Image 1: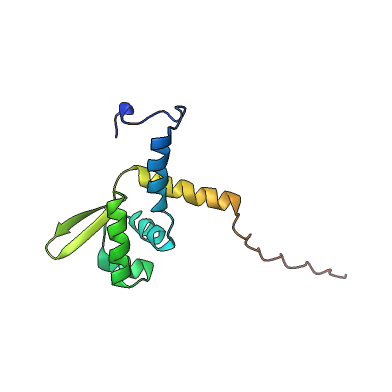
Image 2 (image 1 turned 90 degrees about the vertical axis):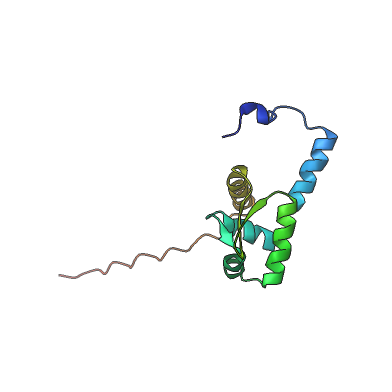
Length: 126
């Protein structure tokens, strides 16, 4: 758990330099393929092969996107033998990804699932 002094208060004004840094970091979320990879990592550490299967992408594309995500410190890698294991970089990311999805669902609600109509009751005559 981070120390409270590690973060600025949300009430503190956002300066121009910090806004630029945040905007640059947010660009990493601007790709559907990178979002799919990040989502796959919500479940925990994965190899490149597992991420290829989960995202349905070519290995070269996954490797390229993972390199970009590493550069932005969104994912971290651990090497063991010939395998590389990727995980989300820190504890903020699951909350951030969840908040992004919830915001999207709020502004663009998913189509309502049509529930089956109850069967009409038959009138019985006596």
